[in-house]
Image (tube, rainbow, N blue to C red; front, side, top):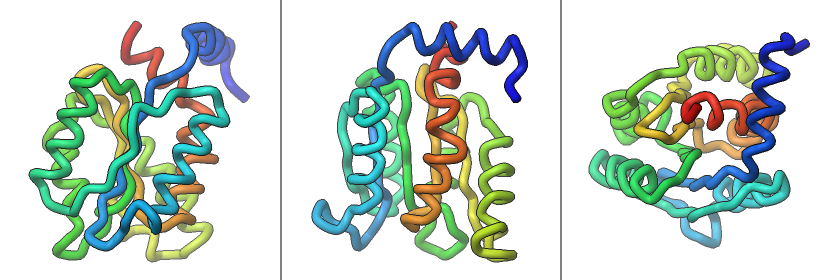
Length: 171
């Protein structure tokens, strides 16, 4: 149950109107036709009444991830959703790039995500480097690239707090 203060914040946040969001799929193999996560997130954002600035696919290359973050923040995206590149393999570099650039981390996001993920995949949840934070005036969220992980993060963590998060960093 939300506290009176949190409820009041959410009410004020909802009054500001739709959030301008961007979706970035980090993958060396996904194409616009196979990007189920990008499509899912766009659909969910739009169904919730938000505006999608853009969706894009970038390779798991540090320069491409950083360029997407910088460009979308400069373009005014209030929420930037990254999916993919959060594991521990050599090619998984999304976390490394984002963690160096975030102005503020939201460690609770990754902690709660891994707790919820544990219920689905067991101890393998510890391999996820899902993270969130603030970069300039944008909320940045980074999830694993599996569709189940993206759905879990959206349904349980992002959607319930999206407007509140954006409101908090700009008030």
